[in-house]
Length: 336
Image (cartoon, rainbow, N blue to C red; front, top):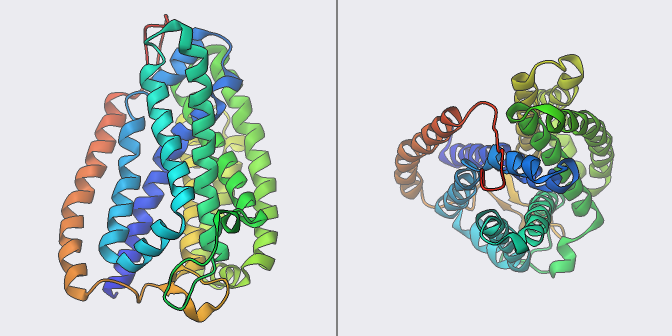
C-alpha cells in the first residue's frame, strides 16, 4: 500500500469520524425547535449534546490539518476556491457555539439564541453536504489547479440535493441520539422523527443516486465496480432499515444510524478515488492523490498521526462513556 493511499484512507477516517460525531449534534440542533415543547425539554436536549459537541468538532480540524499535511495543493485549491462557502460554514459553527454558551445568560434573549442554534446547525449540515456534492460532481479548474467559478457555481441543483440528503441524514442521526439520551414524551417524538426521517432519507438517497448517474457517472462506476462500494451501499441501506426491525433497541438504533453515515462516507471515498477534487471541465485537470507532499513528509506526518489520532479517539470514547446514560434537566438553569 503506497503512502498516498494510506493518507487518503486516514483523511477519510477523520472525516468519517467527524460526520458520525458532529453529525448527531448538528441533527439535534436542526430538530431542536420542532421536537421540544417547553423549557425543560429544551434543556434536556441541550444537555444531551452539551458535554461532547465541542470535542466532536476536533475531528473536522484534525481532518483539515491532515489534508494540509498530505495534500497541500488540494488544501490550497479547496480553501481558496470555496472561500465564501467555508466562511459561511465557519460562521455557522461559531454562532452555534455562541448560542449554546450564551442562551442561559439573559432570559430575554433565550428565544433568539434558540433560533440561532437551530438555524446555524441546519445551515452547517446543509453546507457540509453541498461541499460533498461539489467533490462528487466536480468543480471547474484552471490548468494551474485553481478553482474557476463563483459561489453560485458551488450551488448547482445536484450539490443542493446532496446537501438536503446530508441534512436529513444528520437529522435522523440526531433523533437516534436523542432517543438514546432522553425519556418520556420527548423521546417518543424523537423516535417518530427517526422512523419517518429514515423513510425520507431513503427516498432522497434513491433520488440522489439516480441524479449521480447523470451528474457524475464515473463516481457511480467506481462504486458499483467495487466490492467495497457494494459493501458500503449495503451498510447505508441496512442502517436505514434497522430501526424498523428493532424498534426497542435504543443503542443499536443509534449505532445503525452511525453505520449509515459511515457507509455514505465510504461510498463517497470509493467513488471518488483517486480523485480528491475532480475537474468538471476537463478530467485531466483533476487533483488526485498524486498531488501529495513528498514521501519523506508523508512518512514523518504518518508517525505523528499514529500517535495523535489514537489520543483523539481515546478522548472521544472516554467523554462519551463518562457522560453516557439518560439526561435530566429539571429547570432552565440546568444543562447547556
